[in-house]
Length: 111
Image (tube, rainbow, N blue to C red; front, side):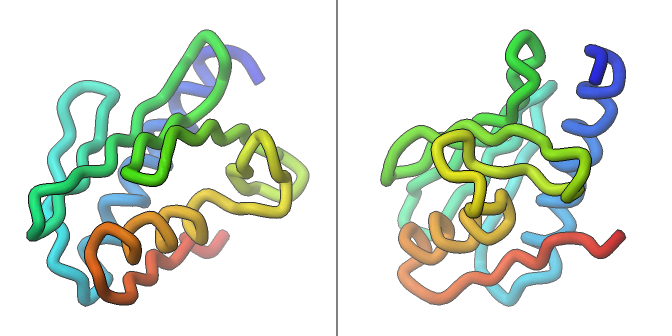
């Protein structure tokens, strides 16, 4: 995937995360500034999601740590670079649940 394709895909993914947050029942605020999406929780904690164009990755910074996701074109998913079985939206649901103190499910978009 070239840089232009990555940027388009990553920007689309950030929008899909916003839509998933909006569709969830969780009390999560979000803000986008440039290539950075910030999720903010009632307790003041945040999750920062941004694209890393030189590495063709989406990075997530949560209370539990920093995570790097790569895109698998065959499976059409973003996966955790250290564990290909862990998908971006499922992992974001875990991180959000930990920080919100209640179950949060962020649905991945359907193709």
